[in-house]
Image (cartoon, rainbow, N blue to C red; front, top):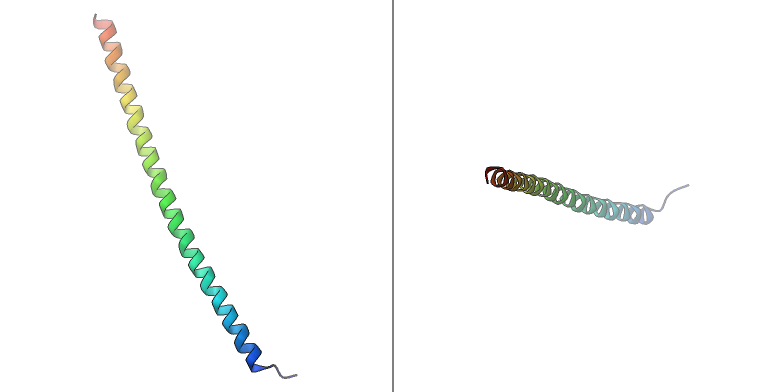
Amino acid sequence: MDQNPTIDFKCQQALEAEEKKVQILTQKLNASLEALLSKEAMVKQHAKVAEEAVAGLLFFISSFLFTS
């Protein structure tokens, strides 16, 4: 049984179009992941700075209370 070359061509075109969509979605997903990881690193850095600020403030307050 011979296959219709027009159907094969259309199937190939549809497959290529779907592969292109997958490629684009993969790129978008990778970009989103990079942005998320970057923001996560920034949040961790801000948390560290905040902890250090609180520790410094507590040290200052305790020094002030115990030297008075």
